[in-house]
Each structure stands twice: as C-alpha cells, then as structure tokens.
Amino acid sequence: MEQPELVLEVEVGDHHTTVTVAGDIDLLTAERFRDFACDEIAAHPKSSVIDMTGVGFVDSSGISALVAIRRHADALGLSVVV
Image 1 (cartoon, rainbow, N blue to C red):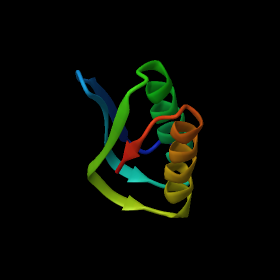
Image 2 (image 1 turned 180 degrees about the horizontal axis):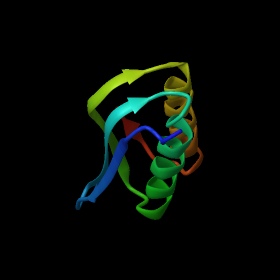
Image 3 (image 1 turned 135 degrees about the vertical axis):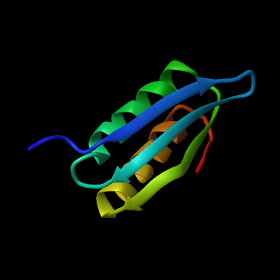
C-alpha cells in the first residue's frame, strides 16, 4: 500500500519557525507529522507556528500528534501555536 501524501515544510524566520502541513493527518501519517514537527522545533528553538491551512482531515491520531508536539515544545520551554 502506498503511503498517503503528506507535505511537510519548514520556514525559519527571525522570530518564529513555521511548520506547514498539507494533506490528511490520520493513523497513516500522524507519526511522520509528529516526528517532523518535533525535530524542527528542537532544531530551531524559538516560538513555533503549525500552519494547517492545507490540511483537509484530522483524526484522533492527528490530534494526539498535536498534543505530543505541544508537550515537546513545553518541555523545551517553547511556545507553539496552531
């Protein structure tokens, strides 16, 4: 089975890092989304924005990924805004 398309991009600005997500965040893609966002937040320690404008669907796995991302940022003393 082919992995569903999930587009993940990062833009590092002077004041914050933006992680842009496009596609569906579900059981098949949530782990990849979580890992990407957590890695980028750790690599660029400043306030972060998760831009989900291009997301068409989020299931409970996606919500769990967002909670994990928030907890990761909190542990680093950083803020994250969706």
